[in-house]
Image (cartoon, rainbow, N blue to C red):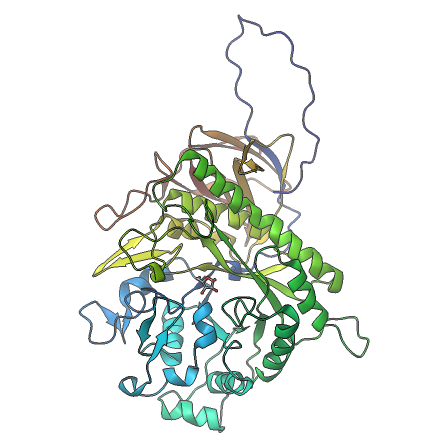
Length: 530
Ligand code: AHR
């Protein structure tokens, strides 16, 4: 949402009339949406995902191996592929995360039984057999119909490793790396869309200062060459949360030495990371057992993402007013204490309706900053952190967050339609912040309008009124709602459908005003067609 188009109502309240009927509560949000004034395109890549060699994400999640009794396609779990295809995931980041900065890609090619083993020191101190490597990841991307986002190793890798990996992946014809790829069974190069230059270099990616990293970023980005028709979108690893100074250092590195005011094309985006939790990093809170106070603290912190994107974007605007360089939030999502009894290094957590609403809050912020935010990746896709699916042997569970992603597919590559509040928006205080208790966002694509709205309040329904202007007759062609009696509700292998979208009956028209009656803690998605 953008700022109100009128100031809040200031009418003084008179004495109560005891004979009057109960007043109709004011809508939690009344807003104008100008359908004929589209804003910037919401890149589908803000709905990206992340798969790290961490816990049960790759092994047991995506990869079970060709000999597994679990149905697989060349070792990749068939049910996971089927589930993720349905939410049209646009890109997948791999192999990390922190793992990326200790990953040496040549360990993950060639006959699997001959691949060297290593210790995954970041995540559980377990042995990594490298059975899932470059070829397996690219095969997964092909099965998913998704674009690869490969994270290069700057922390412990060399510039030559970066250069060779990009050549191995993308170069056609005859070259040392293209020949090696051919010897490993793949003649044709792949298309690689995104290439990450490091990960969290201020922490697990080398404990570097911004100045130290920025020199390395320039070097690695230079040698991550474009081969043939492949044009890499290089993402330089940025700061954590509100480290705007880090972003500024990286932006300064793009200034041309020759006096050209346009930023140089060394890296095309700068990232930052932001995770949501109700507690502290030492005690993040339980995924399923939380108090009302913790619920609202979570929502307050989720809302902070809009402020952070705006902060990084403001720094970038100073160096790049034409918004050539993209911002990438390439790790986001909820991070809770691990499920009791699971390996603390595996980051396995349940996923409730609260998580889906956290995602809804992020989506709205992503749309509002579509002019600068080009890429975002939720952490992580399977069995780790705020995942889409949880696997349990043969069984697979779709999480509430999965459904929130499914309900947003209409926004992919659609033009943002700013939702401009008229008057007050319902809000409350939590965690020292003022938190809107409803969100709404809209977009248009191919003549259709997609509207999504969330009511974060677990104790009360909320009315949202959208005055849609600048369009011909519109009718509702699809409406669904994700809700449950309690934000702690979640899906399990025994009860996989406790939180799943159902048809939404709470939409009515009054002229061109669309009125939505949102149940407590709910997420609604509507498609309007002309
Ligand atoms: O997503 C889990 C971890 O969080 C990633 O490996 C790291 O980049 C971040 O700290």
